Length: 141
Image (cartoon, rainbow, N blue to C red; front, side, top):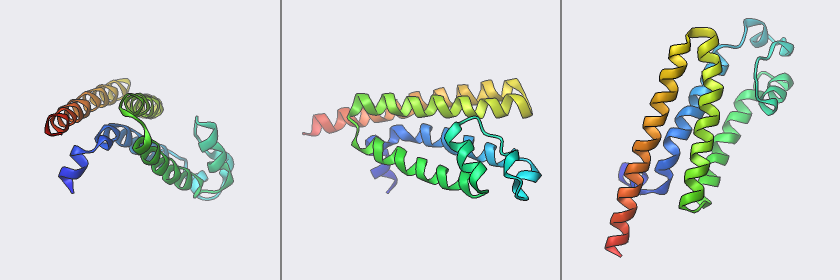
């Protein structure tokens, strides 16, 4: 299973998924007690779609997160190599930004910088693995 994922083009989505899940978790963790007790007006989310879902029900964030994670995989599966890299980088940057707003406000500016740096390294490493395996497949054919 591990080898199948590592030889798949979907390896490029690992950094994007990581940033997305981290952004979702930090959003959940930093909601106020009032929000979790049912005061939906206390929802704190910068993304208008996420904010709408959170203002509708306390499970709204979980629903939109699950749908988005599925959509990332589906879109990534059908994209060609170059478009996949652009999409994966877009998701990575967008969620790195989203999570960095929580990190810098609630924790420390340097946590946000470290998070962005780690995400950049993860993307480059995933791309290196992907390109090496893609070249090996080309040679085998």
